[in-house]
Image (cartoon, rainbow, N blue to C red; front, side):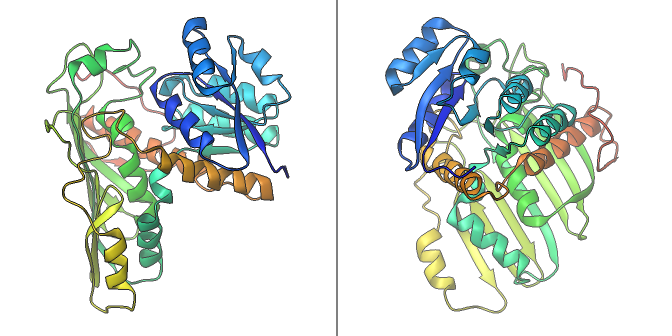
Length: 365
């Protein structure tokens, strides 16, 4: 598709849809033209707020010739059906994280997109920050040497009211998991994006601080990477902090260490310093007073991260290239998280990747 201006429609008008709408409004070459929401009142209010046509019939919206691309903002476990419908209607698709809550459903989405000649882009905005891009380049260029220890840490907090605010929250069917699948998936994605594929995992998880949900609010996992590195994932929504703790991705190798907090670095150290390292830290050094993006308040997210993700996807579609962070990329973190759940629900048993199928999941309480 070669098109100067894309008409975009949003499917699902919950909290995250507001960030999509703001990101689209800030972009050149894109316009929010429609939204779909099952609740007529909420859809009408969203349409009035952002100046787009509100639909309560998905097929009718997908038949609108003004719509070229859809973004999916429904609950996590309700991504597959609208994505497949959009693919059959010939619309390109941007899917909020996770792509869906199981690898089986993601595979069905990928198949539908390929059969209908459209692309599915995962919304993984932390990949598009300048510091993350430089970190991946440093790993790939060999600055770290042999990778040794890798960490992804998300010590966040969510109130009981957060889980009570929607019947889908904290369920396997629609949330797909808890602190890992919902909150930690961005750091887990970055860990895989930067450090490479995982060979096997052992994990433990529990529900420690919340009631009336099926999923975990605290988990730890030990990873064995295919490149020989060892890793740890920590994820929780039971770590109280008024300001919130920044999410971390820490990469260590025999020749260097880099510690990333949200999109800034506390450490960028290498055995062989290069021109530009000091300037890099001047631009991407961590501000300890910044707090964590979305760590204590899920609405405290900067939409500019989404904007960069959207712009990269639409640019690729416009130029006929494969979108960055496509559904195959988004599938990787879901597969690893499902492997972690499989291990945790079986007493920390070792699970080897790739998974042959999505595991059977049961309540942690």
